[in-house]
Amino acid sequence: MMEFDYRKELTKIPHKPGVYQYFDKDDTLIYVGKAKDLRNRVGSYFVNQTQLNSKTRVLVRKINRIAFTIVDTEIDAWLLENNLIKKHQPRYNVMLKDDKTYPWIVIKQEHFPRIFWTRKYIKDGSKYYGPYASVGMMHIILDMIRELFPLRTCNLNLAPENIAKGKYKVCLEYQIGNCKGPCEGYQSEEDYDQNLADIKDILNGKISMVTNRLKEQMHAAVEAMDFEAAHKSKVKLDKLSNYQSKSTVVSSSITNVDVFSIASEDNYAFVNFLKVVNGVVIQTQTVELKKRLDETDAELLAIAIPQIRSKFRSHSREIIVPFELDIEGNEDMRFLVPKLGDKKKLLELSLKNVAYFKKERLLQYEKLNPEIKTERVLKQMQKDLRLPVLPRHIECFDNSNIQGNYPVSAVVVFKDAKPSKKDYRHFNVKTVEGPNDFATMEEAVFRRYRRLLDEDQSLPQLIVIDGGKGQLGAALKSLKLLGIEKKVTVIGIAKRLEELFYPGDQYPLYLDKKSETLKIIQHLRDEAHRFGITFHRNQRSRKTFVSDLDNIPGVGKVSVEKLLKTFRSVKKVKEASDEELKKVLNLKQVQALRQYFADETK
Image (cartoon, one colour):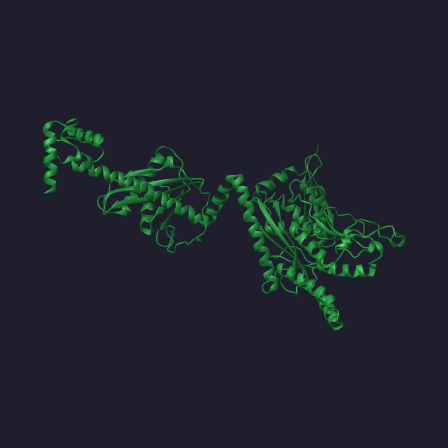
């Protein structure tokens, strides 16, 4: 097999708009793309490959043949690309993740047409409305239509000659008023078709036209003193008004537009579609796309729009999008990025829907695969805290002392955003006398990372110091002494306003109070405080016991340890009887202990 020579292939490709196709060594289509300039676009895959992401580099290595199709305009390229992707489903192209068959409302092509819902779209001349992403909304519309207009539900062949021959008899639906009995000639096709005209307007979103006709009929009936007919029109008007109030009304000036918005993550993207007719949102759907080659939002939206419009058979000339797309419109279609007004509100509605859908779907994924949430949280922390790498290993320091007595320091460790309690450590401060928080922090940080370096253990990606600029500076001093200040990121968190300080930056960073990044940092700080305080209390209590008992003449260190082991506290030692004390001490020691505590109370 001849080796693929991309330079030779490029000379065959013109500088024109079109669609290119990549085939592998088995001549299987693996990717379809569109371009304003075919040669430049295809060439970009092979020049400066170091700038490509890893997935795209894998794709390029598999290319064994290139085919291309020249078209007249970018729109033609866009539509052809979409058709080829749908037909061949190449491995490296983004595909809509949507295996549902949505229902339609159909008006059959027949005498006295039936109206019902179906999941099969048959090209038999019938009129189809939809598809409806919400089955519930579709049934609400159908039920309202059946309440407003008496329609037949049977599947009889109501051709004029069959009715004339008297082949059929009215059924129960006629008796209860749900049908006007066209099977026996009690209703003409003209009268039936008048109802159909209103139904078609309702299904097209033109409710105001129907309500205007009903108002005219009601007023005409009143003038003719036909109050029963007027009442029927009034009931229909009320039902239509009730239905319309439940619809999402935007603005009656917006006649027929499609709205698209997108929200994406690292591996997934979600696209929301709204169809607006006469100021009412009549269709809405959000679809999911799985990224293949780290596509941008603009690229993904350009792929999704033709697929969704094709699925919903939308031919709206105006398409509202959140940002400019690299596609030029034509007479039949134009893209608009609204800046204000009703169309801007419509885009915001779509963005709100897609954000909600993305949040719910990612929560589902994270419940099934907790590691997905971990990766997302770590990437968000990396972004929020401006870190060069993911903070998989984080450590947080906190000091504890009471009026300078018994100073201790603690470090807690989080791995993959969760506490790793087996790695927690505490330090009895050795080189600091008196209340000096900065020196205590300096010693603790130095001892911690001196030991990690000596034992050849990995350093954390992020160090959090509980305190402001002073404690942060002390920690940084130790890191510099160890020569690792550039190998880790260190930040300080001040308690009062949850300010984050960086070395050398006079202005603090403020994170959103609801952000997951801030919550994890607060969790780190609180854990360090809890762990440090617990250790400090234990140290303080032990040293207090020992200092009291160590001062008793004739009672040595070994005897003190026996007393604490037997009675557990100084209080219980005081309360013990002489007989109980003699089990641990000799008579002289018991007398000395009694005398010591008696003198202490004077």
